[in-house]
Image 1 (tube, one colour):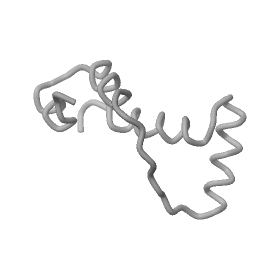
Image 2 (cartoon, one colour):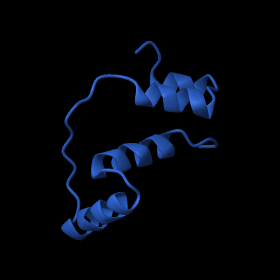
Image 3 (cartoon, rainbow, N blue to C red):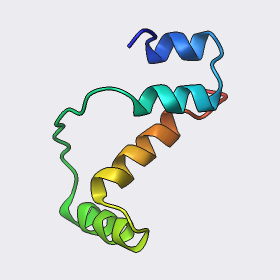
Length: 70
């Protein structure tokens, strides 16, 4: 990737540009340790929203990292 997340934020990239940047790239495996009740609730929420847990997790990260005013 040509731009890092930090440089994009510093240079004033738009929310759309940041979201596009965060959506690109190779897929990597990540282990996240969370309480089982949280995982179960997230699975149920994701299913009710028509997506997988992984898609929900990616969506939440992209939304959080692309917020303006931080």
